[in-house]
Image (cartoon, rainbow, N blue to C red; front, side, top):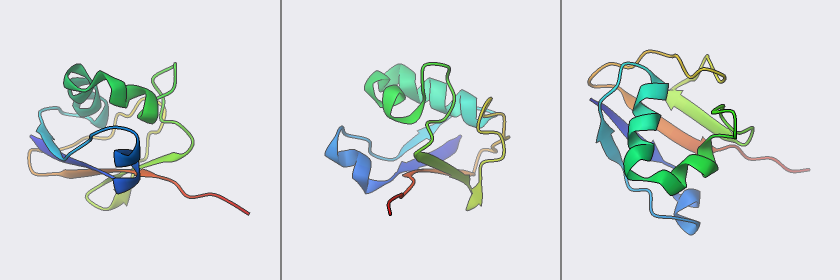
Amino acid sequence: MADIHFTPQLERFLACPPATVAGETVADVLHRLFDDRPRLRSYILDDQDRLRRHVAVFVNGRPLKDRIRLSDKVGPRDRIDVLQALSGG
């Protein structure tokens, strides 16, 4: 099972404490997490199940490679971090 952690900024909108979730890919982990926390889905994925532009995901500190299908593999002791990307000007 992978450990998934969320940026504190998401706490402004909804509760999203860390979780331990089974799955072989980032998509598996996220979709299983959304089964228990359905409101979190719209903050992370768009209507085509792709990561929103302002969301960054890291697996063990490395940026997610597949932002469309979320097919990056995860192992039982991996850590997934979900962050809101910063922008501005």
